Image 1: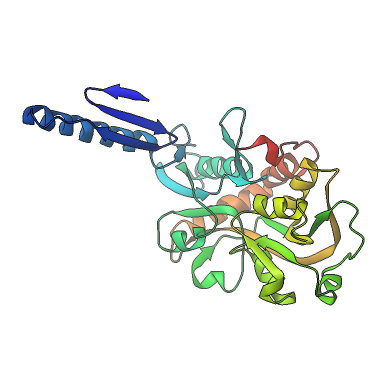
Image 2: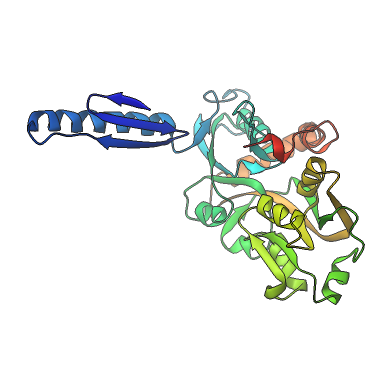
Length: 305
C-alpha cells in the first residue's frame, strides 16, 4: 500500500484501488488530487494491461516469416489454470505451459507479438466470438456446435476423455457401469465437452458441474462425487498430484481434436495454420508433446497458483 499526497493506491496483479482523502476546505487541493489520480490511473492501466502478459516485443523477423504479420499484437486468451497447457508457477509467479511455448514459436514464424491475457474458461468461447481476444488457446475441443460461434485452427492434438476416481474404486470400471447404478453421481466442469459427454449418458440430476476442475476434484476426494469425466491429459496431472488418492480407470469414453479458436472470419486462421503445419513438419510439435505430456513434466496442481 502506497500513500501519495492525500490518497492511497493499492495494487496487485493489475487490480488497483484509489481512495480519496479530500478536505472540503481546499478546492484547489481537490482539483490537484483529481488530476494526479487520473494521471496515475492511466499509467497503471497501461502498465498492468488487464492481466495481460506480453512477450519481449515482436518475435521473429520479416525476412524469415512464413507470413509477415509486421509485429502485430495477437491477444491470446488463456485460463492459466489448465495443466499442462497454461499455468502460473506458485514459486516464481512466472507463466508457462504448452500454449505459451507454442504461441511464442508461432509468432516467431509469423513475425508477431503474442500478448497472453488471463480469461476464465466459462465464457472464453463467447468472448473470442465477440472479438475481445484474437485467439483462444486453452485446449479447446473442436465441435460442430462451437463452429457456429468461432473459427478453429487445424488440429494440433488428439485427446481422450476418461474417468477419474478415488484410488481403489471397485464399484464400477466404465461409464456404462455408472449409468446402470442410479446411486452414482458424475462430476465435471461447466461449458466443456466433458460436460456434454456426461449429459449424453446421464440425466442432469446425476451430474454436478463445477466452475473449474480443481473444485470437482475436491468434491471427489471428499466423497461427494463417485467419478469425474475429464480429459486424460488433465487427469494424469491430478493423478500425479495425488497418486495415493486418485486414478484414471476404464477405456476412452470419447476422442476429441484440439485446436485454437478465433472470431469467425479472422485473418489469422490461414497464417497460424501454415505455422502449425511447419511445426508438425520440422518436429516442433512432437518436441512440445514430449516436453509437456511426457514423464519429464512433473509440475502438478499443487505447484501452480
